[in-house]
Length: 332
Image 1 (tube, rainbow, N blue to C red):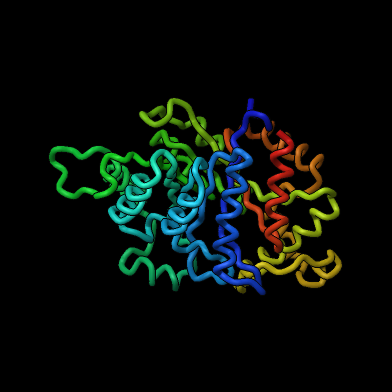
Image 2 (cartoon, one colour):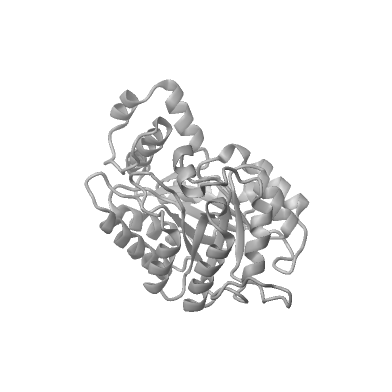
């Protein structure tokens, strides 16, 4: 049974941009955060592919992985994830093969099948491929490019061939849980924004898992929104930044981080329906003092027996993100 002393801690970063900040500063903050987490002993630092979203600066995911890996020495760096239907598998293999060659045994390749954007932008990305129905074939093609070359193979990834970059499947529905189980791959569920299907996805992944050359047993990672502060009241206040951003996402507005606000002001911003939707979005969020954070994480691990927790943390001030993870690390 997993507990706080045995579970792996990791981070998923969207490289958030503050409303009065700059993209350049957001990129530098991401590296500084990765260095901080490396010092705290975190397992991996992942970056998410999103496009055409004001306030999120992680669109050039492979480029950013190289930037973070170059500025760190031990922590694993990867994608959470690359939205494979947006790309030719050969290009992904070449990108990640290059990264794996430059930073051996430190690169992860998390894959998703959602567009990571709106329908208009998806058309600009995919041109002639409008859905992810061939996702299993794309995964197989990509893995073949990363494996040792076969005698009859005419197309190779150079770099890439023979690097065997670790591949993860990511999902916010049940589809990827089934595919990850079928292929015997590690699985990361996006409970940080789609918690309603978490337990069902976990059950499917574990009960249908087929041992493979990659894994003999299932390996489960869960996304967890996290804000930690010295007191519950301060943590809840800081979390209003994240709640404003989720509300903006639901309204189709820009996603720049805004300063935290009083709960009374937040109540005036949303309707009862929007409030319920934001709270559902944050169902597994861990927000509070060290004591509260510890209790909530212990309960989550008791309920799921996850092998790894991948935290998502949006705070308006960079120093508050750093503090959140210092507090988390002190609980082990």
